[in-house]
Amino acid sequence: MAETKGKLVVFTAPSGTGKSTIAKAILADIPTLKFSVSATTRPKRDGEEDGREYYFMTKDAFEALIAKGGFIEHSRHFDNYYGTLKSEAEKVLNAGNHLLLDLDVDGALNVKKIYGSRSLLMFIKPPSLEALRERLLKRKTESEEKILMRLARADYELSLADQFDVCVVNDDLDKAIAEIKRIIQNFLNS
Ligand code: ADP
Ligand code: 5GP
Image (tube, rainbow, N blue to C red; front, side):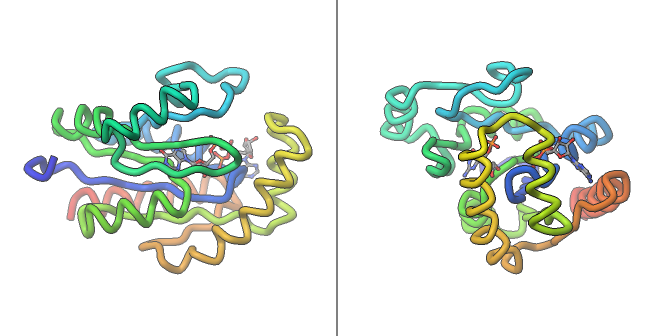
């Protein structure tokens, strides 16, 4: 992969911040930026499609792929595995496009270790933990127990935000999208 010129933009945010909503808008606006579809063992949510949001797989299949060296990085959180597929990243970068990755903090910091200045780590912050809780409740995709797990992890993730290249607060959605788009375009054109 090192010979291609494609760059990697990483979005990280506590679950429920609005990262997927922002990613959809950015991908629609920047045609050379393609989403890196990760693999996960978590159950599919209503409205999600295999191969679009994630490749959904069993724990056994995921572990077999780890053993075969199929991941650039992977991590385990919320009781499930998540990982960036080498095959998926190569497909996008070899076609001359850039990659947008949606990763947790650990995955993002691992990508920086591997790709250095070829990668841009963007941390998206909620305006407050209360706003985050309200967004998770409004999304209605997780049980109360799972929402509490996600909020508990938010503290850990927010404590690492200053290790990222850029931090943007997602308060007003349109403003956050405009700011993130400007930062990404500057990075891709640099
Ligand atoms: P993530 O991908 O970070 O887990 P989502 O994109 O699924 O989060 O957003 C979580 C919920 O918050 C969704 O219902 C979304 O419509 C809503 N949301 C996103 N951005 C904002 C915002 N700026 N203000 C209010 N609600 C928002
Ligand atoms: P969700 O279950 O809400 O889709 O995602 C939960 C968390 O997993 C989010 O923080 C998301 O960024 C992260 N995530 C998704 N795909 C990957 C991946 O391939 N690698 C890593 N390290 N984290 C991921």
